[in-house]
Length: 113
Length: 112
Image 1: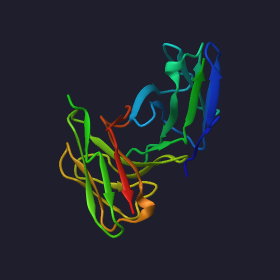
Image 2: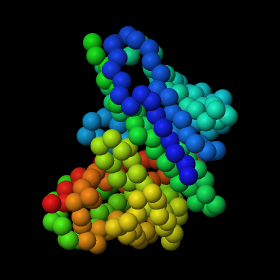
Image 3: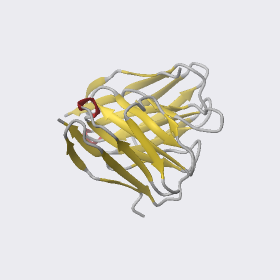
Image 4: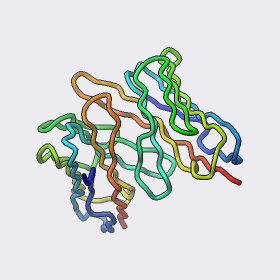
């Protein structure tokens, strides 16, 4: 059974600081995704990581994937208040001819001045 | 493009009542999903449809049924609502395997 874990679950950080969110998963996967959710809103796709060693960056966020370690990281550089949100990683485990995505529990990020 | 739309946005039901949540996408996506989101639980997959004409169970299918009416529409039905089904329900779609999902705005359901 595929399990996805994230840590930390809650993160309060000061503006200007750097931090990393970790996503671990339990079985082999073909794809890993990062999503952002603002309070009371829907989810928005941030990154799709397709292979071992993949790295993607958008603004102050950078995501990477190590399929051998079954680990993805979301690194935040010089945090700003606008990054306050909940971040989810999700892992895609293709099963026969169907696809299935399992989400982690989410990391609630609060950036304080 | 409207993307993924869901109706209704809010709903209050009494225990034992039934209802159908509607979802439609206009992106010509093949795969569609229904999730529920509960505090501290992340998103849990209820049902998914890899393509038109097919549906399959996710992690938490009990108490729900789905219909993939056509390529655009994927509905979720609660036959006899229970307080444990109080949650926020999200519909999502994706082109196919390996692409990111696009989410609807959600339906906030309360069962009393």
